[in-house]
Image 1 (cartoon, one colour):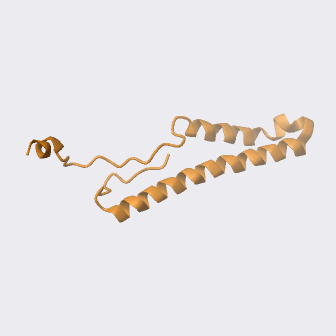
Image 2 (image 1 turned 60 degrees about the vertical axis):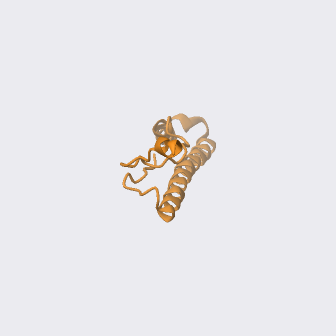
Image 3 (image 1 turned 180 degrees about the vertical axis):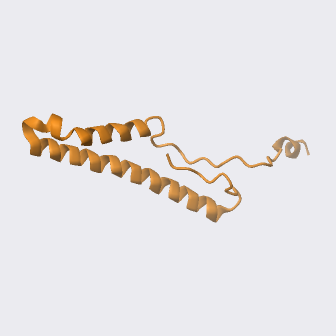
Length: 95
């Protein structure tokens, strides 16, 4: 799962946009890793024929490991880390 820098200043728009871009790229890379491994598995199954259960086992185990790793953390939206000082909007509304 891509990590977001907890020290990110939410008021630094350039930093936030860069973090969003990095977050999206990391998710795309993980998705492409799964797609490439699936294609390798498909190719191995076709090449090995009857013996694919034995000869392609390592690929299927890698594929399942990647899927288990991504379960629950698939594509999640980018969320900014909480900041130490929160703004009290209720005090602004009272005036």
